[in-house]
Every structure is written in C-alpha cells, then in structure tokens.
Amino acid sequence: MNLKYLDSSGNEINPQTLKQGEDFRMAVTVKNPGTEKDYEEMVLSTVFPSGWEILNKRLNDIPQNQNSTFDYQDLRDDRVYIFRPENE
Image (cartoon, rainbow, N blue to C red):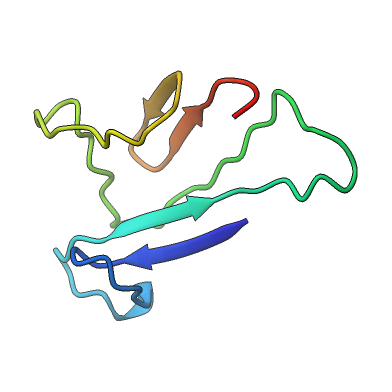
C-alpha cells in the first residue's frame, strides 16, 4: 500500500504543513504482490482527521475522474468507502 498527499499541481506534499483551507488530494495505491493468493471481497478503510473536509464531487457538479473504476462510493463526514469490481 502506498499513500501520497498531493497539491493541486500534483506535487507531493507533507500534510502536516497544510494551511487551513488549502486543498489537497490523497492518492492511495494498493497492490497485491501475489505471493500468497488473490484476495477477494477485501475492504480497506481509513478515518480522516477532524478538520479535513472530504469533497463530494457528486454534490458540487464536479466532473468525476475518467480513470475511476469503482462500482460504488460511499462518502461520509470522516471517511470514504470505495468498492471496486472483482478482478481489477
């Protein structure tokens, strides 16, 4: 699992140096090295710190990323659940 915090230009940043109201993106990459077996029906979740606001693109008419390949996305105040199709 790899986690990066990016500014609006796509440059990697340290989230501890963010100023109030500054937008950023969290990019999470999960890979299975294939040493044990293929995992199915696995859920990964994280809770975001108090004060971080999750942007809900569906409510603000912001175009979705064309590279998104998820079946369902559940946005909450402090967390996001993304369900991807099997075999991806």
